[in-house]
Image (cartoon, rainbow, N blue to C red; front, side, top):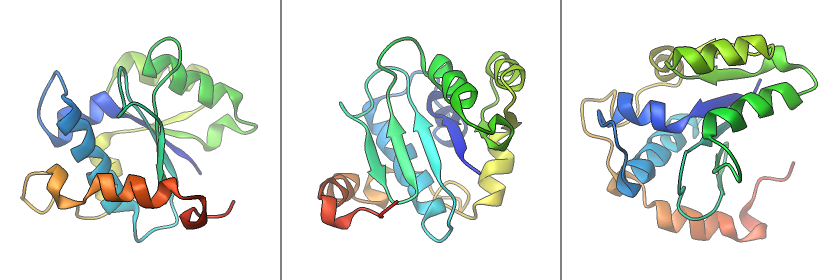
Length: 152
């Protein structure tokens, strides 16, 4: 069951900021990757605007930036394109996006439920989610090499 994550919305929950910076995005990627590391879950994290300049794949986590439109539009399009849209779970607290996802046949989960389901990461452990928690640049370099990617 794929998780589609509303990145800018989740930053507000993890980093407590309304206008995310590149550092906030890297910290969220590190936080989510840390939480998914010990599971078989797969998630796609969508950001509005620059997402490190390109998409990335970090084990069970993929990061995408829409080529056209908003991240919300890309999430809804992804749900609608699935063979079984009811298996998609979109993680957001954005009521407008949640309504659009349900109209497309997908399910919605709150950020709190998602974070509770996937264990204690940096934010849940009472320490700030920081880019230095995980060396994201090293992960990008490692997973940029085809030999290190999970075969599908």
